[in-house]
Length: 145
Image (tube, rainbow, N blue to C red; front, side, top):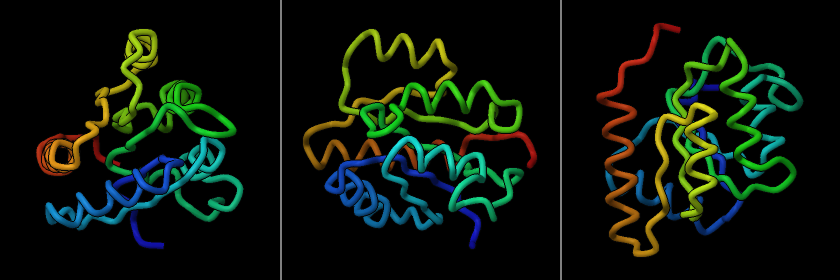
């Protein structure tokens, strides 16, 4: 498996397609892995289940995490990522439709690196994804793996 640089945790197929389209449109060609629920996200991140062959020492450069996920919600996924020494420094960006103050507060309390509300308009969404890619993949410095 090639190295994954972006882990997109999103259950809505339309939002997955919009995000991938925005990446392509903005020439963000980094390898992306899409997972569609909280259980699959945790399996990928912690190299368990169907992702047991992955190396936990090679985390994605950024995780884009929706909060409203089936099986295990995004806040619980975030909690587990930030609670584990092996994954704590992996940047997590919540990319969600929730403007709920409690979701924002809880995300930051759990250690999220950024919280972005998905714009409804495609042009705004495209711009948000472009800025995300530029910042987290080009400008942000992370510890050596």
